[in-house]
Length: 283
Ligand SMILES: NC(=O)c1ccc[n+]([C@@H]2O[C@H](COP(=O)([O-])OP(=O)(O)OC[C@H]3O[C@@H](n4cnc5c(N)ncnc54)[C@H](O)[C@@H]3O)[C@@H](O)[C@H]2O)c1
View: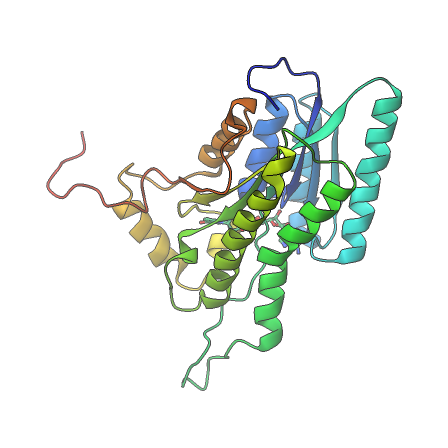
């Protein structure tokens, strides 16, 4: 899509992981910017009420919103969600609109945090199945969603695709091994998709968020240390919030960024590049 062309499309965002953390914050921010929202999340019991509350909050903003409580890594469920979007878009087209998934965000947190090898009889080692499941949900599902959305004509020139990565793609932390591997694969998948989709005018970028206090972070063994270390070294003087990242995604969805693809973009207050200056007192 050429820059500065007036917007004629009806913009929708498809957010995988819409009920919590970055996905929920991005869904809210995109809705405030006028996008219709399709959310995919996996919530049972207690967290289901939180998911419903996010959906209702978005509905109150006056944009269309549909949440699907399904496993995003399940091929059949993916097919159902995509068929549902296609049917809704067909109705919108019949009414004269031009709907498109203008933003796709992969923000799934569902992994195993066990060591590869341990001599501690109390500690379990990660199994092959757990490594594969972590990679399927957190990395490979990006390919299958994007491919099916492309073939269904739901993403097209001007669509902006994003996936959430972390410093864990570059650095290793005890017990984070399976997720580190998934993040490295996810970044590679995004570059590959960027390469294959830029001839179609579709961009793909990874967002590398700083350490953020979300339910996913709290599930990592030793997360208190990770959180305190990140807050201490972040030159911005605080942790990243889901809202910091959500605002960046809204901005990065601009039609002006049609030539920016295949990147891993830090949204972290400078956390990765350095540390707070030693000897400089905060005012
Ligand atoms: N929190 C951090 O510090 C941090 C930093 C950088 C990157 N990330 C990445 O950001 C992404 C989102 O993390 P978060 O912190 O917002 O997590 P979160 O736990 O707050 O949210 C995770 C979301 O994923 C959904 N989900 C999980 N498994 C699913 C499945 N199989 N099918 C459908 N939905 C599923 C949940 O329902 C929820 O909506 C993850 O990829 C994570 O690795 C997190």
